[in-house]
Length: 218
Image (cartoon, rainbow, N blue to C red; front, side, top):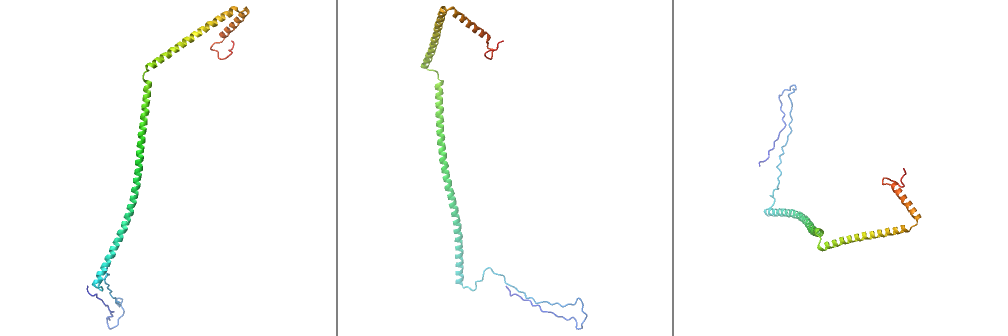
């Protein structure tokens, strides 16, 4: 790189003529100020280490490498701590899901066992109902037929006995009434005939078409 150059500009006063002339608008004096051109060198990113010896440069390099390694270790440790927290969170979620899965499996087993018990109960109930229906619907046995025949015979015998008792009672009443009429005095006969005639008139007066009692006389 070359040495920077400096430009110096001095004031210039020129006389156009020795004889003074009238001022003209295009005549003027120009004053030029001196400007120093300042040139600065670009800033270096890295400092020059000309003032350090070779051993100092090596030591400085080692220190910089040591600091960079420590920073890398710190970043790695922070990242590992973050990953450990994530792993712990995922492990806790995994354990919770495993517990929930175990509880659901237990409930499923209980539900299956309950379902099997209900199926067995329904099967036993249906089989008992079928057996009961078959017992009811199967034909009567020989003993049952005999028992039924005996019951019918007893009912028939009881009915015949009842009819015979009624007929005997009717005959007895008829004979008693005849005996009473044979030995009754004449005025009893008149009273009896009067009551019979009254009953006959009442029966003729009343018929099923009447809706009130006593019926109205026409």
